[in-house]
Length: 317
Image (cartoon, rainbow, N blue to C red; front, top):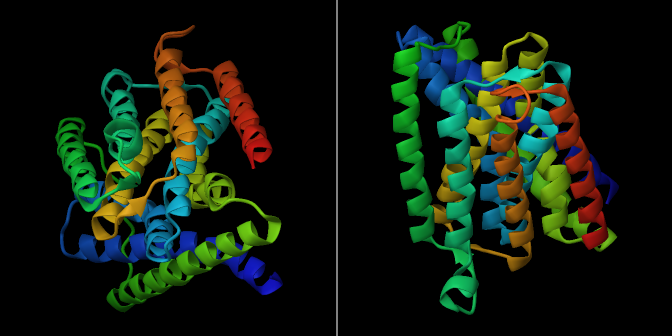
């Protein structure tokens, strides 16, 4: 048990560091091939920061741990909004662009609603088992393509991009290989550890997925948004979170289900409702007090709600 727990904790380091190395190496090579900073930011960096959740989901899915796979995504989305945006707003009030308020936040809400419809075969069609089938996965991926199309269109208009650092060719290749290995081993250790911890303490895999695994795989988003808030760059702080939530549902769950269907635990519907409520609350906050600004007191409210959610999860078991 101690070895498993140690590998579980070390797995988060390898997972996050692996994603960082992979993004750094791939971005460097893309830069050497004259790919624009904008294109690198929208593709390699965006996909790379979602790599922790993706790897954990794929490993969990192939291991037959559907609860862990879905709970990881739902839990990440809840922690992204209530925990990470809450912390970021407390650090510095976040001014939100009208496009984010009226397009990206509603699109994030749509993602969770679509997930509820696709996952609840039992409630909607009266099927014996609820699951995200391959067709459901392809539907989610289709929405993801629409989101990418929208993102590229916005980026061309606003001209946003990332300043990419260049490394030597062999250094870049080494970073890509090390990053891939880090993701592979880290993801496997986290899933194995989560299953063992759940068994040892008599907890469900979904509880572990909604809490420890969800927050752990969201650490890159936490670091990026908190630092952006500290540097008074609200666009990155909030855009990073909303984009991540959309990526999580449409890209990660979509790809996971397309590769291997995922059985859906109806108990997770409550957590989906919480994601919907948290996203709706974020939208509502844009019109309360100072318009299009996520204020410090609102951040405190979100953090309090996240704490209450964790207490609820512990009581629920």
